Length: 617
Ligand code: ATP
Image (cartoon, rainbow, N blue to C red; front, top):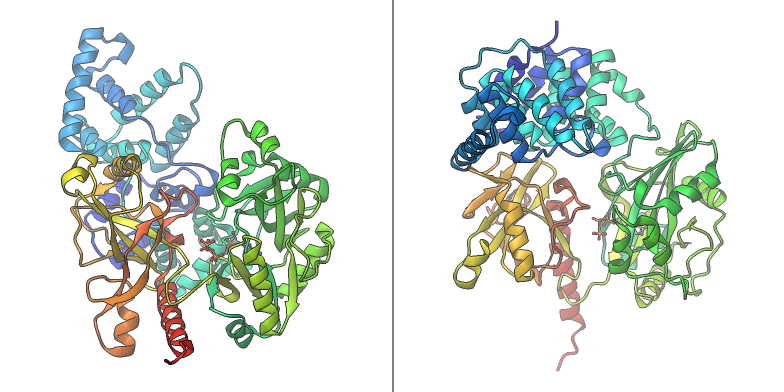
């Protein structure tokens, strides 16, 4: 017997009232435990605010106008077009006023439908209706959408209408992130201690619904047999940082060194001639890069593969790489072909994760890389040769193998002169660690005199109204946070009030107003209280002069109190935004507390080094 929609809504309502993440995961885990094999994947997606895994599509995001019309139909018990125009206008206006007063489409639907009886619909019935609604497209579809939604709402209890209304507008707001779902799936499969098994499976397929279904079918043990599969993006491996060639060689010995290219990371999947391209963030970019799709088909034909590389724009006249600001203009939904002629892309492949039905993720890097060379026909480069894009749309990244720090430093200097960000060193026996940042890959970027030259990606957790001139923009500053992987929360690190143009500040304030929440979200740690809390959703890139210790912010408090017994965290000195909201980064992709700690240590050792090197007078 499947779930009735009202049972799910009752649990959602309990979850809404909860502050602690552990308790939240407990309720959700219990819900997962009670549901059956057919329900678990749809339920996971709905909790994520979606109808399918996030890499397959966006939340619904229906306009509030359509919801208002649907509610008008329910209220008047007539279709909107049957209402006389005067009556329709009046009704819309009164619902608009109510919505402005309540500030939440869910509360509005609950209020309008307050006389409804408990619903007889099952959760899966509602899910299928929502799927149908999301597929309605094209001319005339709006009228059908409104009446389908009105019919659905009229069959729901007030509480279920609350959640369905929020869902269709893409604003479910249960405060549940992927890490809470992972914990809940672990609870449902045998207890929190098994979380790492669930996380590992998630890192391989990025589909928590699929992971949930596997647990239902074969228990947690069945997750260990989960293999990468074309069509399911693998969560990407990331780099740690070090500050010199000497440190790199001391850490990982003989290694490979590549340029750190500044383009788009692409994870490319092909099976039976079908190609899919995923971004670093696992969004689909297939339709944006037709030349890469074509070249992949040419290379692989009917074979299957998953590989990764960095796509860079090329100047068609000189054949040289374009800067990131130019490459990024290829990220577009319209005029794709036209733009691909103006700025053709080259893909520099740097890793292979799967080939012809077999996972390569556990094989050592030198083996994977050797296969990259054979598959993509790479030329061998010499360290002194100037970097040139390989011929053809797809080639392999340039690399050297060395165990000498001086060679690493030489390569670094050379690529920096060529305008690249720095280098990436790769451990030769390292496996591909999906979804994790560790020393299998180490980046070395331009760095000087104890200042942090690397930018940080921070998550906005709140904002301030500002004073004077700024008051008219509706925003004076943001409160920003880093990602604390251990506690799965966002920890405050800086208040930032500079770096954007007036126009961008206004855009930002409009975006943030949409996600204001009345209290500090459960996955946010901050003693600093902004004028408004927001859901931790948007990432901005920030530059700062220095990282300092501070008792004000929550970032890294545990690290410091563990080592020195003080309650201090870290803060940024003179932070300013250097990008608007980054569509390519999810909150969990933000700079991590552990990176702040290593940057702080790096900064300290660089400044000590420069003190030592100062000539004594
Ligand atoms: P940043 O914002 O500095 O690019 P990040 O947090 O996105 O960092 P890192 O782990 O620091 O990611 O660096 C890895 C990124 O570097 C990859 O996501 C990829 O896009 C890019 N990259 C460029 N060249 C290479 C290369 N040769 N090998 C691996 N990754 C590369």
